[in-house]
Length: 121
Image: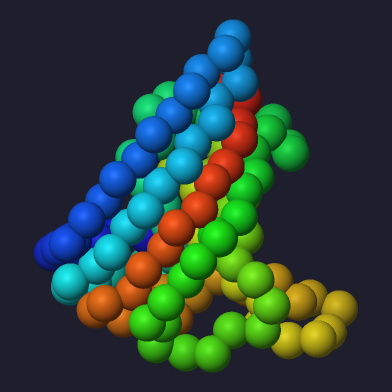
């Protein structure tokens, strides 16, 4: 789950916080994916830690480009509870377990635009 050496041509994010509810939007364009010590694809750097409760956060990738592998369906976000991180999950197959998470879909020039809402800790 750790990564080093990433480089970006742009990494932009905005948020609005009302009470404990945080809404975020973001755009990330890589120029180098770096190296990874884990197998999960994550979006890090949220402005506040999420609560660790089930269903406390979710979102969607509006646009994804330059991926290293085909994905089935859309990319969705869910909480890595109690942190400032979200999992970037993708559809893998038309099966009983259709959602997966893998760093293997990332390339040096991948792009992700999206939004999420979550409850702070």
